[in-house]
Amino acid sequence: MKTARRIGMALTLFFLGCETTGTAGPAMHVDTPAMVDPQKTLQISMVDVGQGDGMVLKTPSGVVIAFDGGPDRTGNYADFLKRQNITQIDYVILSHGHSDHYTGLGTAIAMLPKDCAPRVFDPGFARPDIPGYQYIRDTAGCRYSSLTLNQTLMLDPAIELSVMGVSNTPYPQNDGTGINNTSAVIRLRYGAFSMIFQGDAQTEAEKNLYSMFKTQLAANILKVGHHGSCNATGTSLLQAIAPSYALISSGGPNDPNMFGHPHCQTIDKLRSAGVHYYRTDTNGDITITTDGRVFAIVPTKGLPDSAACPRACATPSDF
Image 1 (cartoon, rainbow, N blue to C red):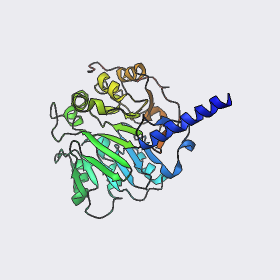
Image 2: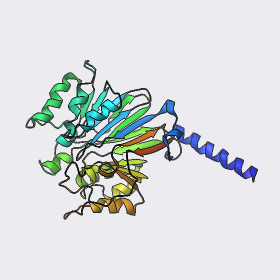
Image 3: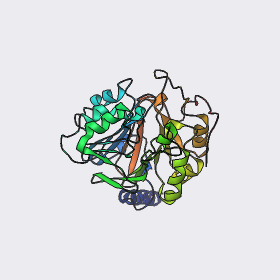
Image 4: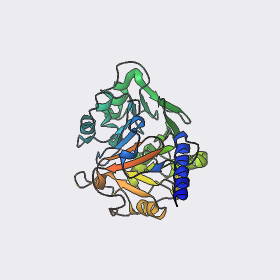
C-alpha cells in the first residue's frame, strides 16, 4: 500500500511538472487559491459591471492590463480598481467599439504612463460617429495601436496573448451585429494554463475563427461571447475549445437586462458539454488565479451552475 501511494504521488508530481512547462495537458483546477504559487500568480478578474464586459489582469511581474471596461453606469469598474489598490494601468485592450465595453476604460486610460509606447489596442474599426469611443482613441493618442490577425502581444515576459480573430470592417452588416463581429478574440497562454476572450463575437466571426484555428483553440476557460447570447458560442466552436469552465458577464437585477442574457440556448450548450459556468449577474466579481500549472476560480458570491437562464431567444444561430 505504501509503495502504491509513493508511485501515485510520484506520478502526480511528474504530471504537475510537465504542466508547468506547458508540454503536457492543460492546467489543473484546484479548489482554493492557496494552492497557487503566490510568487508566480497571474490574476484575471471579471468585474461585475452589469450588462457589459470589464476585466482586469495582473501578471506575476506586476503588469496591469485593463481588458474592456464595461458601461460604467454603476461605477463598478472604477471601484474595483480602487479596491485592488491599482494606481497604474500598463496596457488597455478594447475588444470592439460598443459602449458597454469601452465606457469604463476612460478611467483606465487616465492611469496609463504618459509616454508614446503602444499601450491601447483595439480592432482598428474607426467610430468617429460615436463621441464616447472617439474619446478613447483621442485620449490614447500616440499610445494607440490597432490589432492584427495572428499578432502576439507579449505585454509580460511570461504571458502570451495571441490575436485569433479581429476585423476592422463590420460584417455581415454595418450595425450592432456587424460591430460585434469585429471583436478581438484573444487567447491567453501562461504555462499550461490558457483562456480565450471572445468579446462579443457572434456566429459569423466564430465560423471564421473555427475554420482558421480549430486545432489550436483548446483552453481551460472560455470568456463566453456576447454575454451568453444565443447567437454566439456555437456548438462546433465549443467542442474545439473544450473548456472546463466558462465565464459570462451580463446584467442583473440592479442593471436591467433587456436582452435576457445569458440565453437558455447557451446555458443548455454549456451544460450539455459538461462545462461549469460562472455569471457576474449571480456570482458578482469572478477572479481566476493561476501559476501556469494550476488555477482556482473564486466568485464574490454563489456557486457555479446555480442560476436559471432569464429566457430563450426567438432566433438562435449555431454551427
